[in-house]
Image (cartoon, rainbow, N blue to C red; front, side, top):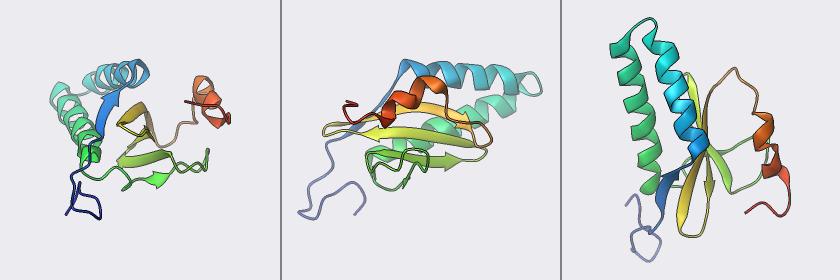
Length: 116
């Protein structure tokens, strides 16, 4: 069953949105709202629902190719990527970005061996 371990215990991880992810969602909503406020609201709701669904199945996303680290993963809500980091007790939503965008320079520190 989704959200349960092999022992039948429910996952204790909870998704936590970073300031970066919140800022990106705000910017995406503002951009899409220029054409349609309803479309923007629906898109943001879908992205938030996709991120929240990670609480039940955190390993469902693929490894982010730019990092190739097992704990840095992504799920897609086209045309956006929800990039997250698996931690022992949480899922950190790192950022939300359009599939055509490059990983922002301020996230490059995730490559480091000592990244939290």
